[in-house]
Length: 205
Image (tube, rainbow, N blue to C red; front, side, top):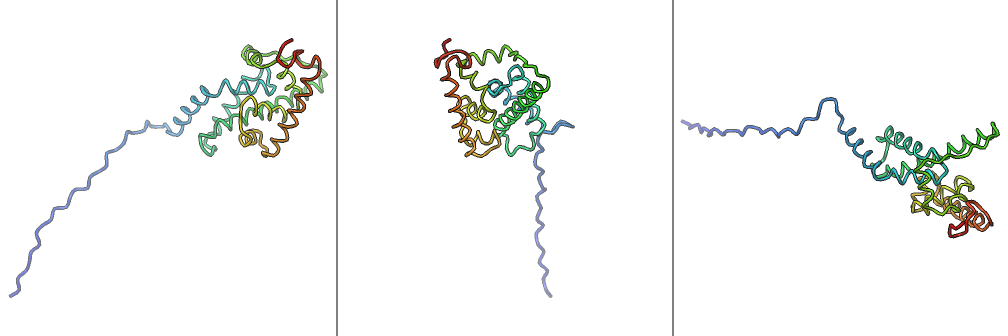
């Protein structure tokens, strides 16, 4: 007669459920929250610098509006960025494009109306311009747009060639060419007696 071996009953552990994290507020996308926080940090850290850039590029009284529009463009295209770290470079690129478009519109307007509109600088724009030598700023306004952009980004914004190329949407080689030609044109303008701003090399009248 064979004996039947009975296995001892083994109690199986009850599966434990991982504690649930904090529930997101209904209807709120966490990506949107992160975007808004990033936009606030960008505004606090880069707004004044971008206004200065727009002024030096020739935005005149529209500098603050140009920068505000650049932030709106970034906000609407935030999720197309490769990474959030590229946002400052994107803002610079948008500001350059917007100022370039503004100058073209003004040139067309003046060409068809034969009216030379006198620029009315905002208080902030005027303060920014007074920080630099008036003669240099005046000479910059008379340079071709690309040369002006390259010089401002290089010597006022202290960007590297790669960053300038990205902001202007051109190659690094083209940046070198614009900087070189711009410096030559700027030197000629500043050597001209009674040139832009009516000051000497040290900014004296």
